[in-house]
Length: 208
Image (cartoon, rainbow, N blue to C red; front, side):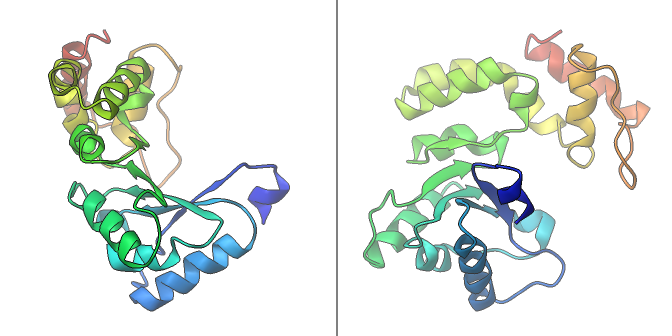
């Protein structure tokens, strides 16, 4: 409700963490959020929440007019076809939902397999390159995808050398876009022993 009052255009709603709700409860949760009136992008990131909203159950909420997208951060590119197949089985269009990758290391293949784009960590430091990567992947230009993605490969990996967003905020500071890499507790700034690794990845990507 605060998001609506603030004039937000849409909401990114993560699966509830820690309590590990069953699938039927996840269905109710997302339908309830969508009933509030703001377009919803479901955020499925079991590595952080401990619960995985499965494709066949995502498809059950696909018909809600305010559920418009899924940020799929399992790293499993087969989820694209699984969600699309499940939507079709439930009587919806295969592209009823926008499918967005939330895993930079597999984003290129996710989109080549039929996804629509990404919500990216890497894009915080390399927005132009990630845009070009997505455009090439949408066109299924495999050679161009490989060319663009190769310099970013270490960055996709090393931006998670500590818990996100610790490394990426340090990286944004390192390339001169912000003055401070402070994060509110219980997070902390990137440990000194990891800074060289992230700096090397930035150099590989041509960002410093």
